[in-house]
Amino acid sequence: MISIREEKGFTLIEILVAITILSFMMVSIYTVVDNNINTKEIVISEDRQFLQMYTAMHRLNEDISQIYSPLYYSSIEIKKPGTDQNPNLEYSDNIANNNRFISSPLFPRANVLNQPIPIIEQETKNSLMFMTSSNKRFIEGQKQSRFSWVHYSLESDDRDEAPAENMLVRRVVSENVFERNLDVPAVRPQVLLRGVKELRFEFWSRQDVKWVDNVRLLAPEERETIRAIRLTLTWVDSNKTERTTLRIFRPFWPYFDVVKDETERQSARTATNNNNQNNNSTGTPPPLGGN
Image: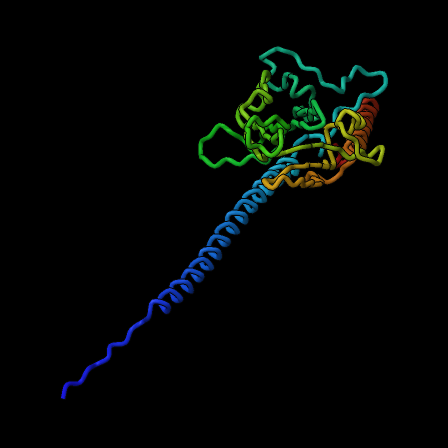
């Protein structure tokens, strides 16, 4: 007796159905993976733009918070009636006079301690130049101090793919900051933020109790001792969306009435000199412990 063994397998229809199901699964998996890749690229791009904005604002805060002027803690020499004292302390070009700082466009005058006073210059509403003490020396032996000149400005961006026509740039000079012919705006710029549409600096006026859009609108005694700077920045991201940032930066220096302090100091010095002259003329010895 011969037995016949029946061999069973997948039919053509079953194979086609399996292939169809597998194709749908592969398309679904590809769609999920592609969406994840696109989402990752978008997130990375947004994070990169946010990081660029954060870095720019952090750099501005570092520079402005440590803005430097000796007038924050001292005054110019107070001019008294009937004397030839010059509050601007004009200096001689005599090189032998080593204890005097020769005035220059960046340091037009000095304080009562003969320390040069750096200018705070604003050529346009979207530019600002000042001296800061935020410089950090990372290499030993560099000819740098903690002081540096910084210049912020808005310049055109010539790239074809630029989302906006301007970019925020920063120029910095950390060597030979007291050079007479130093040209800070001529230094090669560093790009802090691209796609900038608008940049505006404003300054807090203690006298007028309001914000002014130019440092020259401040009172003369306030121009070299800035108390607060308000920055308005509008930039365009890669999605052509405009974003506006409003920040207020304040120097670390507390407020002192240095003019009042210097007036009292000079009055006390004058009174002491008068007492010494009177004592010398009368022959009376000065009291113990006196100046």
